[in-house]
Length: 508
Image (cartoon, rainbow, N blue to C red; front, side, top):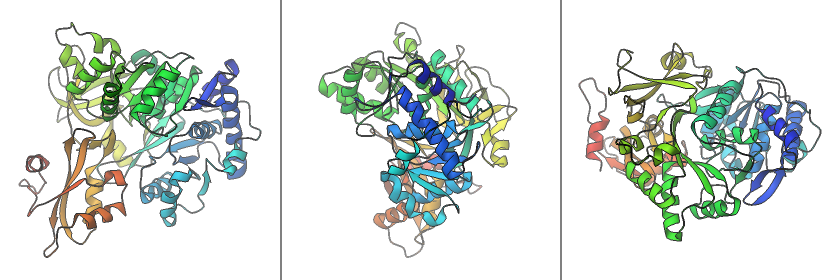
């Protein structure tokens, strides 16, 4: 089935119900939401030649038009490529080229970044700003009553996640994958009612946006803060004004929300459910969040390759303070969600018993179809239907999963994955840099910061500003190192591999 059918159904059942809101202002009811999506879907085919299965990039910040465009893409049977609005223009251009996108949807805030790398864009790529008169016309015409029919295995969402090779990989998620993920939300995360409000304070292009579908199915409200992003005071105020708010947040966002609640003398009234994930939540932080804001929290662990759906730690488990292993469970990421199986494997692929640490693998209806045009990565990552996550952890006798490491050395800053190889490759193109290794160093606000350990070429001088400018010319601002540490040599083993464990001891 086509996910856009859920919007069509809600528009028939609840046409006058508020659907899209900016802050507390209603931008569209469900009838209008569906009409705009249908009209835009027709315009995609008529004006841009978009056929079912074609890829359309979405490079925009949060706004209600983002959801109209997303459902318009699906209405036409096309595939959405949600792109992080913080990426560098060259990165955006590479994604559009790799995905063979036919159309890129941008906004005023991303236009300059997009145009910086216009020479790298694929030939013939059309561009439309979703905050332009052209988009207004495209969403205001006539459209088909029903979305284009799609099968469960048809591609719906092509999400690019950075890889250790330094190039992002396109995760192929089907309509069936996303339906299974959405229904798992009901079983493993939270209930949904038409009175609810899904608040998008984190990017719609990522985890927060993936939860829109189940809220569309129930005809709930979809709210983008007036700021377009995360402001803790704004979120607390919207909770009181709207009520029944559910939102996804990275652990660093929750920490800031708790600090704001304490300062305001509030507990998060109106924020019914806060789902957290996308990075490590320290035990002390979640205990403080519970003490300040009460039982509003649900944790999920997932990856782009099995979106939002590997494990969950439900609200009831956060509240089960009398259990003898309460703190151990609170420090875990919960148990396998309903639509997947989870196991731990050893170095030779053998399944390990409870208590032993190894690689986390997952299998089920939410696991991706594979990586876009990347058979080598598929062969390395998918084995007999099992997704090798690259994360390391252990299961206990009750099925609770505890993460112990990230074998791919990903740095998670503010809930966003940053892969060291991308930073290293950018710096190694500077003539002053002979060797470099990027690591994550704990930070109380962001979770981790990127630190670049640099060995300079003979005669070169340490110059943070020059290296910073070089990074900003090739990678996104949020990926650049927050600090540079200059060393005479990088610690290595007998095989020449850089010992990042030793670097972490050197860099405090």
